[in-house]
Length: 421
Length: 128
Image 1: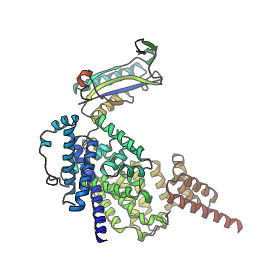
Image 2: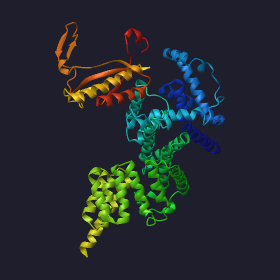
Image 3: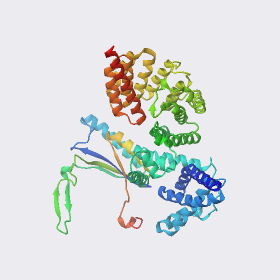
């Protein structure tokens, strides 16, 4: 019995280590061999070797270094056997001839390995690749998710996801998408693209228990980016935004139904994450180079700071949304601003603001949910019900649909109550 | 070093954004001449040109030794290649930078496509 438990624990540890070192190992092998598919195959081979050996001998002190060295030796062996490989092998020359035993090479955590990961994420998120390919590559190559796991995260079949990955890797090779951190002049634009991919991964996992692991993967990537680029305040802003959103997850649903911010049990919010998020936001404020992610994080920080919904500093929230709208003038930002205005000036002002942006967001369920809530506060039950019904029709998650069904039911009950009075 | 095709498209016989007055034409030509000079200086320029419209095209098929000629372009489409550059670039980022400059100079979207192989077949067929 004890043996079974210990073996299971060993297997779980090995799985965890694989997930942690996969991205590092692939990134380093891509630098050495200049070929993503070759790198992936070699790292998978090394995991097969490790999976046997580590379960009996235990996990070595530097598992990433062990995997990288084993994978490199494997790749070189394979290359020697193929014609194309002999050329590549000659090209690699001295590097390939100085083989080392697994584990005796110093692949430090913050040495060349981290730089490789940074290069790889910029390659995966290159703007010449379409967004869904950027996301799939990032999860597969840096997150170490299996093709099937990536496929399930985006509700497509495994074969469709495999094709997507093959196509993206083909373009990287054919078009010669570089494997490097962009020059300073291009960095702000290119970093935005990387950060939005990570945030998209986080949001894909939002409020869906089936895909919750995407949120932790996004936070892990976000932490790695902050470590790798400590001077980029937007990377810090994204991490704070994700950590602060994550802190409220335990309170955001109850029995599978969405709970609005105003009704959440704030005692369930994760204080450790809130403290971490607040510390990052404060550091961003001191740095004073605001950007869209830092401003969104600051808004979340104000919410997390309030002991109750009523105690929220709404004027501060509206001011932050104004600032955010000036750098990111999207209808969704305008929508959130309109909702915040409703908390200060009342539902009439909110409705005016919502109607002004309504046509832009006609397909967005939160627009109709916000109109429903505002109309209900104004006592316009029929139009409120219609808005909630439209929101329910557009909503993507089960938790949202359940919440909206409750609102519609309550409105029908109120209607009946007033009619029979 | 890779080579890329930067191409622009005619849409229904006209390139959108093409200058209409002589003054506009002059500034347009000035921008394109400056771009090509810059490509030359960087050894990026390989070849380039503007094509006549698809109405001037002829398709020739070998048809098992009995050649057939067809008046008009191969693809029936509203869009046809209007002009192109072939450039040298270290990688896609460098090619995209030239494409951006070309798009600015010509005021028209530019498609960037990598060559799989260039030059004479006998020089590269062994690599494939």
